[in-house]
Length: 236
Length: 290
Image: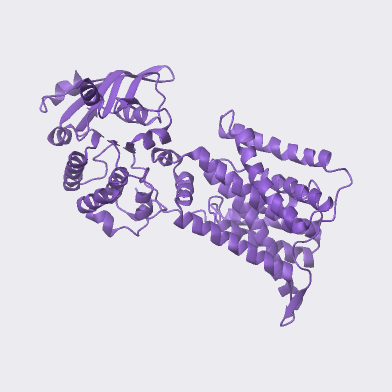
């Protein structure tokens, strides 16, 4: 009984008291956040508030000066490649598409570890992002921004991660494409028990589609419950 | 005319050797972030090992086989012992490769005697055949064949294996590759292992033509640098095109204008290419769209 509840408490991604400094300046100062399996969580904040840094600290691309980040109750390693193998996928700022490789090759690189669920997941992804299937043989650099974003999301999910981190979700997407993409993301996450942490400046979109939205300010987060309260959220 | 054609054929064979060395430089540059100019001397040192085994009475082919295994180990050791530790910036690593370059030349002088240069036996058959008045040497033809096999192998690796795809990923976006679980250290180790083997191959093909001594790789290293620049320093395929251009041109120059001008002609081609196409012949092939 105790074991079960402990497991439940630790399931998914958990960040406690995260500190990150860049040459002395405190960028993140005691940030705590959790993403449960199947949950989609939004992280909003001003330019330069540290949204990207939060994701980079989780992935190990930014060095942390304090705090504990764990996945399913196990501490995450420090090196990015080890974090990825532990089950954290990261769609980075600017999407991280390999322009000289084909769409299919980009996606193959997302299969970080062999998982039995790969085939069912691939089917679901192909249904959610039909454009990616159509563009399979194209060089990824020739795709439009929106198409590249689809490829990046597809690549992030194909490895069946426990948690997917998405930086600047709305970048380059038309409002309609954004809606399709985030609905697909939320649906797939729920169906396959993948936690999703979405960073964006578009707080209205986050409130509309996420289970919870947090606001990052002064290196910490607080729950942002009232979607209409934009002024006090940003200028408090 | 027959002479010119013969010179061009042997120039292509020599050019492919240059191209192979240029390929190693660019391959290491793209996968590990540093163009290691010590690879020339790594090949020289490995060729000396094969020479010592052969001199002690071993057959040339078994000696070359053992040399190949040693080269793979040697490549791994160089990466793991000399380059990977101390981390540091790219400039730091670059300086260490220069030190390695000098150290290997000095060590070859100490270990392998001061009566250099040595005659090195050829693995390839001598003689040749005449096709329409053009002399084709067996050794040149076999060299072309060997390089083609190696290039095909690399293309197949990049296209069909997971490791090959990861090489391309690291070369394009090292940070994103790590986010996708690519272990850069492991890939760099494999890259140096392959580089060690290819460097020995260059040494074994070159030594019979021009004697074995500690400075034997210096001219071809400069040619390879010129070839890599002509091909566009980031293009893997361009290195062989650059190599053939440099190989044929320098062979023609040394035949008709005298061997004093070979190095100057290679560098002239490099500067001319940079003046006309600052990114080299294939350096702009990268597609980019925002």
